[in-house]
Image (tube, rainbow, N blue to C red; front, top):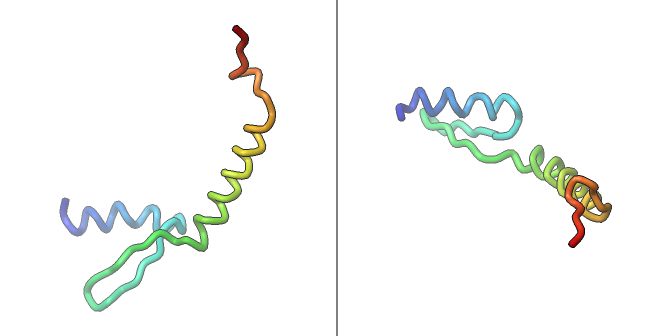
Length: 63
């Protein structure tokens, strides 16, 4: 994959604030934007854990 193609593919998650970038001369380094991602992951996990505590009719069964 060419450098231009990689840059094009990284632009979308960067613009969505999923990545942050740091330019060093001609090179650009991308990292996951922890400040943006972690709070959202925590919220998702909390919701999944709350839903796990409540029985769901979709997944209930009896033998």
